[in-house]
Length: 189
Image (cartoon, rainbow, N blue to C red; front, side, top):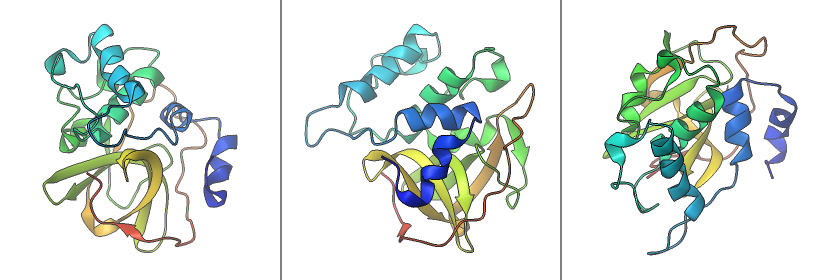
């Protein structure tokens, strides 16, 4: 269940990537050597759709960072029209590769459903914009404390804002100012 400050998202009719991501909210990485079959299944689903060939046989454990995998599965599921510019990047497990997805948006211009790419120690992180406050973006993403969740990430870590290549942009794609609440995430791996 979404925290109270984010329950308004349940009434949003789109963007489709937000709708798809919310269906997976709370999905949790398995502890230790175990693997959550749902997370592993996302890679299998992408391979079956012809999108995950580069990682065929490579992604077998949910201990491998999976924020990019999460983004790839929701982009795939939201992409009914199968236009090439709406597909996930070829190397979608590498979070920083999402800086080439969709269309460029100025760093200060994020809106509901935009893809946000961040730097972190040892690599990057990727998730969806659900809002912002004075110092952070509120990000819906995978592998945030080992689960699909909404986390605050510092604006200083932002590398790129990318908007899906909409045929018709949903009317509710807008900036969403939110109250500052909770601590900032420092490393999503």
